[in-house]
Amino acid sequence: MIKIYRDHDDYVLQNLNQIIRVQGFSLDALFQSTNPVEYLTPFFGSTDSEPIQQKVISIETPWQAPVENQEIWAAGVTYMRSKSARMEESEQSGGDHFYDLVYEAERPELFFKSTGSRARGHLSLVRIRDDSAWNVPEPELTLAINSGGHIFGYTIGNDMSSRSIEGENPLYLPQAKIYRGSCAIGPCLVVGNVITPESKISITVTRQSKVEFHGDTSVSQLKRRFNELADYLYRENEFPCGAYLMTGTGIVPDAGFTLQSGDRIQIQIEGLGVLENDVE
Image 1 (cartoon, one colour):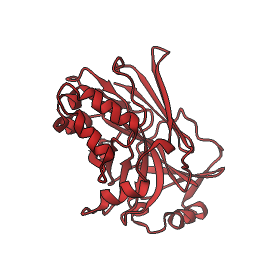
Image 2 (tube, rainbow, N blue to C red):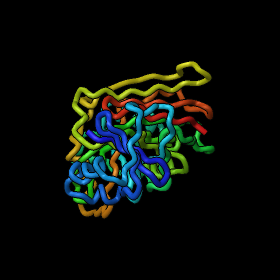
Image 3 (tube, rainbow, N blue to C red):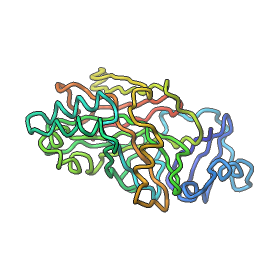
Image 4 (cartoon, helix red, strand yellow):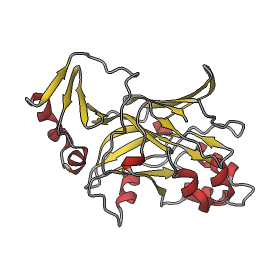
């Protein structure tokens, strides 16, 4: 397992207790590699690498999103809880039936989420839309897929969403999902097989030092297989620098909850760490 953190133009790599700062490292080259571990290993013995003495990277260290020219996509309605929430928010508009169909269909729902330059990193600010009255974070296990369509790593994603806009009409999904400050990933990219069906996903939203919402689930509750989602994303498409794919959320707050400016969102996935963002 190798963790990759992005600090402006430099990268910090961690392999067990060995932590190094690397100049000239390229995420694009990593995503284009057919053997990512083989690509990464030489950096730990390179004279261009600067050893870092600490053995643990602090959760209080801000990091940029571990993304260069990778597109960030997302899958929807992949958990039963997500299906129920989407049907609830779309009931008045008559769109609830579509989410039931998507959950049962062979073809998954996939949508574009963000470019790399728009993605926020660990301890960066995320946003809620000014024209939306009902906004939620969506904690999502996120796949790192190389240019050949093979999954080689994972990170944590926050798919910020406007439930009021999406619920008004399913065709408004791009506006509900894609806007300034709507996507955060991090704190790092983890290369290796660190995710199991038992891996726990949890989220805590704190407001003025009080826990306003907490929820958890496990990867086992995901209806779709990772390779299935990746295969559909790459079907009739190409990603020269690879892609990230958020796999959907199994944690959706009840209708009485909406995010507010100043809220703190902490998403934790076993093996990947904690992604923390404040709401602007």
